[in-house]
Each structure stands twice: as C-alpha cells, then as structure tokens.
Image (cartoon, rainbow, N blue to C red):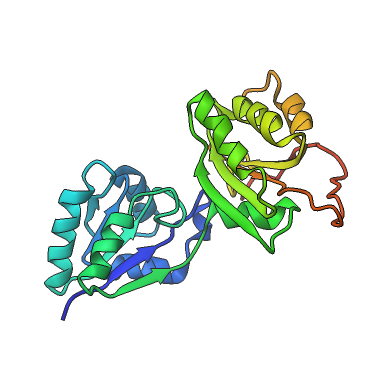
Amino acid sequence: MSGTLYIVSTPIGNLEDMSFRAVRILKEVSTIAAEDTRRTQKLCNHYQIETPLTSYHDFNKEEKTELLLHRLHGGNDVALVCDAGTPLVSDPGYYLVKKAVETNIPLIPIPGPSSVLTALCVSGLPTDRFIFEGFVPRKPGVREKFFEKLQPEVGTIIVFETQHRIIKTLRAIHKTMGNRKIVLTRELTKLNEEIMRGTVEEICQILEGKIIKGEITLLIQGQPQRKSKQIAFPNSDPITNPPFE
C-alpha cells in the first residue's frame, strides 16, 4: 500500500496556533516537505519534532515531486507544509498534489491557520461571499487592469501585498474602483498585529510617511449594490492588539 500525503497547515505567526493534530502528524510522517527548511526547523524545534526535512519550492518542485512520489509509493507517509498558514494558498504545493491525485496517492488535509480567513472574520466586511486573488501584480499597467477586472465583483475582495508596494496599490484601487471601504491587516497573530479600517483615501492618509513592516492582507468592499446598506466604520484608527504573553 502507498503512503499518505498530508497537507498540514502551520501558524501564520503565533506558534500557539499550531493544532495538536498537526504536531502529531509532523512527528509521525517519515518526511516533511517544507518551502523553507530553515523556517520550518524553528517550528519543529519548538514542538520537539525530529522528523527529517526536505525542501520543496517552485524552483525544485518537479525534481522533488518525483522523489516524494517515490517515497509515497514505497509506503512512506509525507507531510507538506509552507512557511506559514495553509499550503497551496499562494504557496508551493499544487504540482505535488496534482501528481499525487493522478497517481492515486491518498491525501489528507490537516486544517489550520489561514491569513485570508483570519483577516476576513475581523474585517467587518461581508463574509457571505468573497473572492481571493492572491498577490497584486507588480507592474503598474498590469496592476490597474487587475483591479479593473475586479471592479464589478460584489463580494469582498481579498489580496496579498507587500509593505513596499501598498501605497501604489491603494492608488490603483482608488483610480479603478473609487474610494471604497477597505481593511488593511498586517502581522496577523504576531506581536505587532495591526488592523486598519476606512476608505482608500483615509488609509492612504494613515500610511503617509509611515514605515510599515510585514506582509499585508488587504480586503476591499465589493461593488456596492443600490439597495444594500453602505458599510460604516466608526473611525479609521488602526487597532493594535496587546503583545502575546
């Protein structure tokens, strides 16, 4: 019998968000395929996980997929993890999962943290319908076209952005979508967690001249419908949670 490929979610920041099941699985499998073995090693050290690690990323996925499939077909269980959160969500892993499905390898998801859902549930924006579009394109012209296509979307729009390009992205949103309500979250579950709610213009004013760090999950109000109530945030002050003890 072949082994099982486990898709294991890991914390997006706070190590206490690791599930008991995830820890057990990572201890029991024969190999952990990690996007960055150095980062995953820190997690393993914290939970005393001694399972061997092997790198698996976009630059070696074809070679490593063959190796991992060979181990799986030999009866060995393998766990796939990314640097943080749920694998395959803007992270490597699709190629391996696709090949595993094609070769009848059993797959078991070990659910856990996701910055997309974490940000959505505290945003104050509608949660009954949403769309995740990954990272915003880097090039100026492509960036504007990206948001132009999303302009008619009525559900909450969720994207990833970096600290260096966030102002340019907000300007592109304002240009193509107008002054919509947005929620900017960064460093979720970490010591410097921050949540900012307001219009595009208000958030731009908050960020003006401010140095921000960390990855950003940005939520954009969907196309306002004529008969629906407009979302009103009480203020645009960022929310900084107290340090984790």
